[in-house]
Length: 437
Image (cartoon, rainbow, N blue to C red; front, side, top):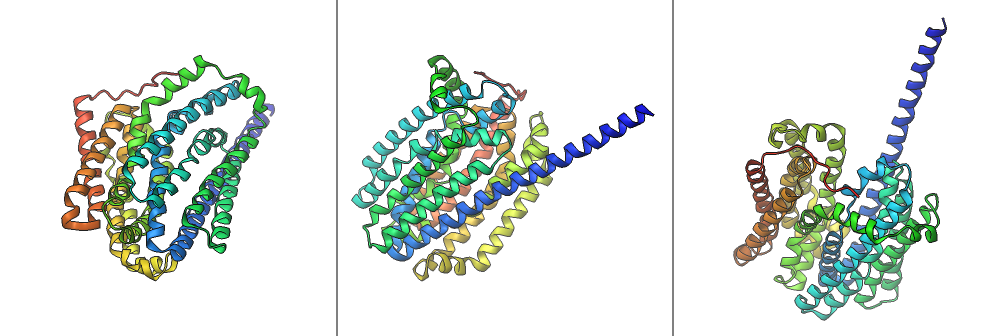
C-alpha cells in the first residue's frame, strides 16, 4: 500500500514538474516573440518616419550606417552567446566571476571593433553627412555587445522577461528621440544619437537586472587577467566565422552604398530592410528546430542533406514568403515608407527569392555548429562573402542594383560547396568541446 502511494506521489510530482516546465517554456517563448515583434515594429516605424521626412537619400544614409553598425557588432563577438550559453547553463556557482570576466573580454572586443570600423568609414565614405551619421552610431557598439552578457545570463536561466523589458525600453527611447528631432526639424545627423541613447538605456537596465548575481563593485573585483584570457581563447574560435556570417547578410548594402546614387540606394536599402525582417523568421526557425530535434543528429557523421525533409520544409517557408512579397510587396513599401519607395518592389521580390536559399541554409549552419567546426564555419562564410563580392562588383554594370541579391544568392551556394569540400577533406566530425575556461 505504501509502495503504491509512493509511486502515485512520484507520478503526480513528475506530472506537475513537466507541466511547470511546459508553462515556463511557453512563457519564455512568448517573451522572446514579444521582443522580436517590438524590434520589428519599432525598427520599421523609425525608418518609415526617417524615409517619409528626409526622403530616400536620407534613409539611405541611415541604412548604410546601420549596416556598418551591425558589421561592427559582428566583429566584436569575441565571446559570443553560442560559446557562452552552454557553460552558463551548467554553472550554479561562480556565475558572477564568469559574467564579469566575459564582460571585460567583450568590452575590449567591442572597442577594437568600433575603432576598426570607424577607420574603415573614414577611409571609404565620401559623403560628409553619411560619414557623420555612421561615426555617431558607432559609439553605440561598446554599449551594446558587452552588456549583452546580461541577456545571455537570463537566457541560460530560461527567463527572457528581463532582456525583453530592457530592450523594449531602449526601443522606446530611440523612437522618442527620432520623434522629437523630426518635430523640431533637426538636421539629419542628429537622429543618429537615437541609437546611442537606445544602447545606453538598454545597458543601464541590463546592469540593474544582474542585482541577483551580485553588486557591481563585487563583480568588478572578480575580474582577473588569467580568467579573461581563458574566456578570450574559449570564445574567439568562432569569431571569424560569426563575423563573416554577420557581414555577408549586409554585404550588398555596403557594396551598393558606394556604387548607387544616394536616391536610388535609399529605395533599394528600404526594400532590403523588409527582406531582413523576413529573414529573422529563418533564424528563429533554426533556433527552434535545432535544439528540439536536430543538433544531436547533425553532430553525427551523416551529411546535412540527409535531412532533406527538414530542408524542404524550410524551403517551403521561404517560398511562402516569396509569394507574399510578390503579392503584397508594393502595398507594404507604400504603407511603411511612402509612395517614393514603391520603386523598390522588384528588389524586395529579388531579395525574398534569395531568402529561400537562406532558409535552407539553416540546416547547413546547424550542421557546422553541431559538429563544433569553427574553421569550417569561417571557410563557409568567407567563401560566401568573396563570391558575393565578386558578383556584386563585376555584374553591377550590367544588372544594376539586382547584383546585390544575386551576389548573395551565389554566395550562399558557394558557401555550401565550401562546407562540402571541407567536410570531405576532413571527415572527422566527433564534436569536441575545445578550450574551456
